[in-house]
Length: 71
View 1 (cartoon, one colour):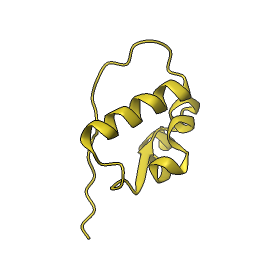
View 2: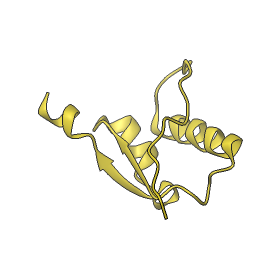
View 3: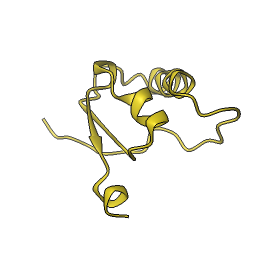
View 4: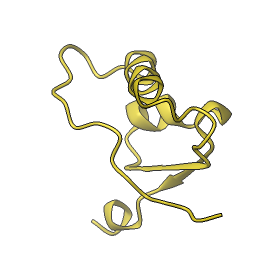
């Protein structure tokens, strides 16, 4: 099995960046692409909003971006 890394969406996100709102947005984008069963991991910065939105097992293993951690 070959793993592929890709951006699932690049859209403007209106409103407050709350974890539950970000999670709903991400799930919607994943469903649009019909890749729900293909995601094994997600990498984001360590902001509490995006970490909370993506750290559930629903999106696979969560990894913190090393570049963001260095800065």
